[in-house]
Length: 236
Image (tube, rainbow, N blue to C red; front, top):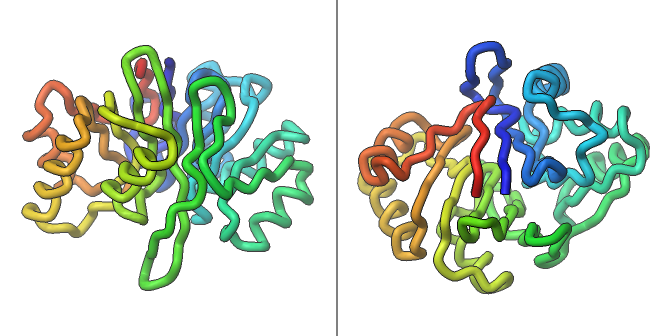
């Protein structure tokens, strides 16, 4: 199954970088929408992705650097399905409706298209406030992969949730934001050990994961470390 990284803090030459994250899965499921519609639309154009290709948008959590590109997508494609968590803000939900989006609240794990699932709301915190998040589970040709926006509930907790709700066993790849910036080497090492216990073959920490975590993951996963940035395209 194909994955295209559309927005990230790092980008290939010719693409725009930014604080947010967005990627396209299987040519039709947009996961998060980056920090700005301009960079998302420009990078989509560069990577030959049309709004007409997109069947649904999954928003991992209600932070501006994951939602800001959504509004332009909805302006260009009315009726677009938007998967959100029940605890997202009323402002977010109202804006989706006002722009003609079809809001779908993911209370539990749902198969949104063949072999692609949303986990539904997972409890998390940010700055000591409740911040729910959902992840994407992909059953691809190479195995099962989990895609996260920021993993505010903790990446290990996200994997435990996916295992319990969707029946995930060994994992081919885990990638996306792991929210490890500022975390110590020992704590990051423990998280890597936890991923390996889940049988994670490849890891691609990006966005909010932090440069230190990327270096440590690269040292532990070696050739199975995936250096993710806008413009990357790979199979899962």
